[in-house]
Image (cartoon, rainbow, N blue to C red):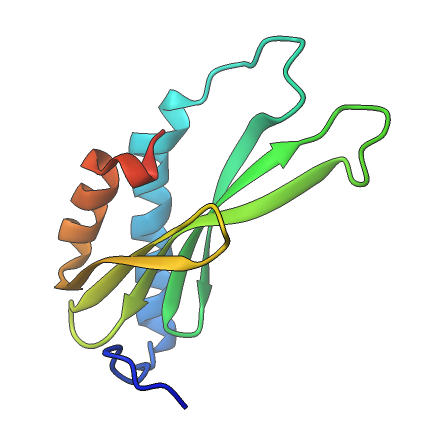
Length: 127
């Protein structure tokens, strides 16, 4: 097995997950949702919404797209574009999803606020 620099996953308590989810929803409402514009009628893939999801020690930000074409396999699809990993009290790593579905670490040992600031300014998380 290959050795990585990622520390072992930490556990979030139930109340920490709830607090994290509230902060993530507020961040999405302030930063990403105002940037969603109605697409041109000819565009096949269009933004429908944004979600956040706590999964274990990770918080994922997910974009939801619609596929209105008659040959679409599914009317919608979702893809995670950012992931925050919890590694201790206010210690987070931040990843961006690459075009090949691999996660790219963009920062480690950051506070939650620093992660959100990174998502506001880094082109990997373009709105």
